[in-house]
Image (tube, rainbow, N blue to C red):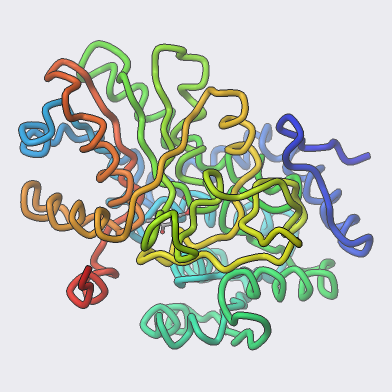
Length: 389
Ligand SMILES: *Cc1c(COP(=O)(O)O)cnc(C)c1O
């Protein structure tokens, strides 16, 4: 029997009957391998020797001077592949390979998760197919070329809005018909159980390392932790190690796009309502009669009209709070980190930086803010240069 995978009233398994055996098999395998010494040794080995873990925590002294508080950056931008997504792709890829699957499929929006999956497929010698909205394939052509270079086949999804939500639907459909030899490598801490729990398991290394590193460097815990939230994987990966530390305030940052008063945003936790999408109960951006809205922001990696169920639960229980940052504020933070620190952050991560800078104002130079810098921003350069308020 599959366990429920509930976080309060959020999460669960709301999938078609035809998918249930696959989800049950995956849950059983995950529960077994996540405690298996051989699996854990191989996974940790790949993280260290292939992907470059541990990533450092860096005290951003120049940003701190402007901010007023002490700012620390967890440098997931230095991970192989340029973002935290590698942690999850390697973990699920290895799990699938040890289960005897020969093929990986995945959805991708901006292409970052597709590239991470193609990387894992190449490394593990598995056939890899990526589902990507036709519109996203035009917008993110260089990521399509990267996936192909690493041997993945990219399928154009032509249904619906031809973007991320439609790519997930296509990948789920494909999985139903190929479940025996194929693993669906979902890219964030969302979807039906066991995905939210499994993706958290592969991302929680971020917070485990950071907690140790910041105590080592400063002698104590940070006062605030700030991470951007799309589907929620880098944020839950950072938050998990600090959940029991009641003195540490946890803050997730969603994309306010052109403004929360417009429909051009992706602030699911702040503006969404209870709903069911992609096999889970969570907050969803939807009309009053349940039509799913498309999420919009300058940062394609945050444009998901739902969110991982554990974040909905952390918001409801009050353990974490969620704020939103506009495109304009994120672009400003992107430029500021580049100029002051010589680090180009992903536009996704720039949302977290922008909120941290607001938070720092008036907090005093003794308070410490740890930001998860989820990825590097070379990919966003053209978009930022083109951006006019
Ligand atoms: C994909 C991505 C995100 C958003 O995904 P989460 O699952 O919310 O972490 C954030 N930052 C970067 C750099 C990304 O590539």
